Image (tube, rainbow, N blue to C red; front, side, top):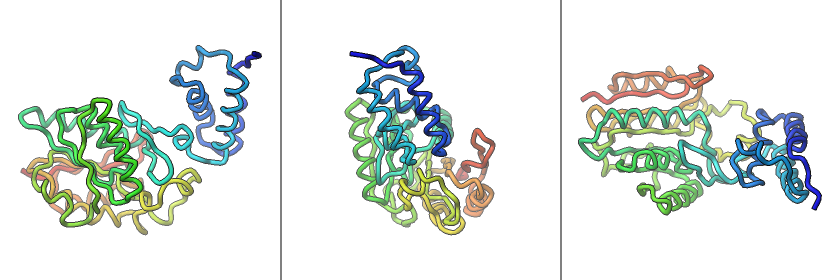
Length: 290
């Protein structure tokens, strides 16, 4: 069987994706090639030649990516921490920026210590990304996750079952509205660490086709100022946290100060605005006074 050099095929794909307006054409081409070949992306250099059938499969995926179908919908997975999650139509695709929120949560759990089993809550869990990544990293934690959308909850249940089958500590999934005064009432005053990546995009924001056409709008938009979910959710957070418990909420880069003000208005202290790697406001963390 005649084999084909991989490098020029990937280069051609990167040029195709760049012409289509994809923001990271080379990286996406390499991710798709690795997906077709069943290897990690860094190992592509060890595979100089591929079959014509593999080239055809790869080019078909590249053509779909050029139509601005999300990369994660084509590979079927998205990463968070040390785990991969199944994603696809109907569920929000976790973003690399949320890794910062995940890292913050792990640091807070280290500060909690091991005098009791830590209780963690993930509000607006979507695919289960934050909750499951935390449960994987801290198998001693009792992790709860809340999601209102039934399609997203199905994805979270699928991911939770896969992680439990792989040996991770199971999480507790709850169908519920994070703005409901009764949601997770059984955990009132018990939660050590709470995280949330809620719908926070202002309805007037300009979004790339991958987001606007493929992420569920219910997971994206938070009203005219992006705070329609966050604003009432702060009361839920205050109710759930134990004394000296901590919370962090991801937000649009236009309203970090507003989120900080909301926390302060509910009596939280140590309110800190955290930037992402590009220096843009990304999440606000706060502590409930002891």
